[in-house]
Image 1 (cartoon, rainbow, N blue to C red):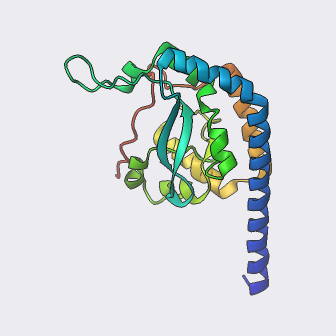
Image 2: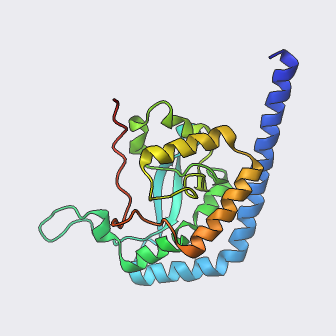
Length: 217
């Protein structure tokens, strides 16, 4: 590739990134304004049913694995140990109300502020736990070459009913094939999933199993 072609390629990439960021910002701002009353109602319900804090904050790896604070509505009780001092698993801390929030994806609404800030995009690989960073293969780690998203290619192709390895393959496929057209398709399929409440949790599990790393043959 000659120098002119390289310059054109970089310009094209920067232009597409600018357009994606502009769409993310305007769409997130509009969604926050339109969904503000709903978010307020959910916040009040969380406060009444689960207590304080209403917003769950956690460090997650973003673009190039740089950490940022992700916001979600709280779905679990604050109690972490039983009467014998044993650590309670997530499925014991997740209430029926919290499960309903997850099934409707209402717990994800505060992430719109992450999109507004530029930490996340509307579409991209989901931001996972920071402790997973050392467990990725070099191929899987490529999911951090783009901003994480509220929804993504893996979420509309099985979500929590596929293996971690399948999710990561789908994430990397998105990194290599991402486009505005694909983002629109993903968003449209996401809306359908939200209304149908499909693939919210792995069959027989209240929460997603922890990713322990991919075994090497």
